[in-house]
Length: 512
Image (tube, rainbow, N blue to C red):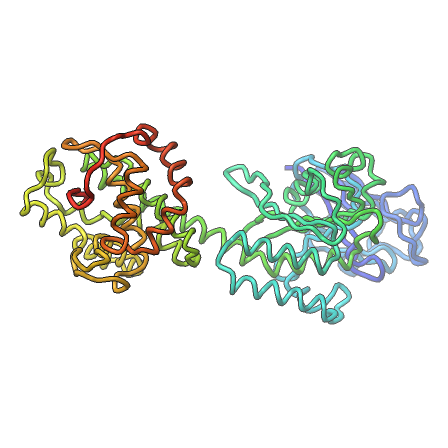
């Protein structure tokens, strides 16, 4: 595979500056050369680096002060260059890097500087700038605060927005964006946006061209004068966003590339500098491990929720009369929990616990579970045992212990006549009280072989009548306050039930 060479300055004012090519780099003081070195130790036409069938080679062009590879002066014969070799023109030293030729996206971009330092090297930039000087207090505080986010924020979206807000503030950007690789093709998708003090708005929040180049090449990029690059100046995203200077830094860990942190400044701000590039690259290295962990946790939670959904479906497949019951009760419960302003932690328990509220029905005999008529008292007693059976099933999985109260207690009654433990009032776990209202509402509006379900309005009225007897008054009040949202949910999932005319007493209803 064809390789590209990248020569990175490591001495004097050229430290960090990069020159790269797929075929030829000529070095000297002449302005027409690819590598222009304004140094007295460098000849006008000093040396050239050229690709050959054997690889990249350097040749001295009769310079006064010589060309060196790893400290050894070479003659006019070609000298093979290996990765990490130190190539020196006079007193100007550069390190050679070789890489497979990347995708041709953005190859003509006017790049002022790039950084492809390792994750470990970039992480050292947390404490020191590119000149090895301690960072100013404001910069160091921003980097430390980014680390704080990784420990104290549970939400992936909250984490990304907090990181981005700090980056925009400390680098005085007019706008910032985080785009992460997603899917089998690693397509870059926008995940977070932030605006600085002078953001003009606009439809475009980042340059896809620069971001793709940064991600594909695996290097952070500084474009300090995008209006001087014909390709960028003509880009709609650049013009619409009034972007005059762009920093695009790679989010990566030692394991893989994650995405890109994109920052820009407008025409009235000073262009980004190489020091800004170094700071942003250090920030990216500092937060990337946390971003990777947050993404892995999200995927793990999604897998867990999908597993729960499959378990819930397995229960419903055994009961031909309760199709969709679990999904509806879960949605109603979440709407009610949000209305009651439960914490994010409790909302999570509702989200994972409600789909499993009837898991114990796995242990109920089909002759009872699928009976088409009303249950006898003895059969109803067996059906009631699903709460205890479900709690016992979940008790075998320690991580599911927090949702056991939902499964065990969602048939308790506010007046103390429910089951299985005859809990009363606030003795009943609050999450179970919420699910009890949602469960009863769906049971009332569901058809059974021996009766037709209530209309939505009749079911709301029955809940209100049973407030303080069967149900927690606060939960009923909250449910009634969101009746429009509940009705909208029913329109999507159960449109035929909105006009059902029949009414009956909840006390006579079996919805175990």
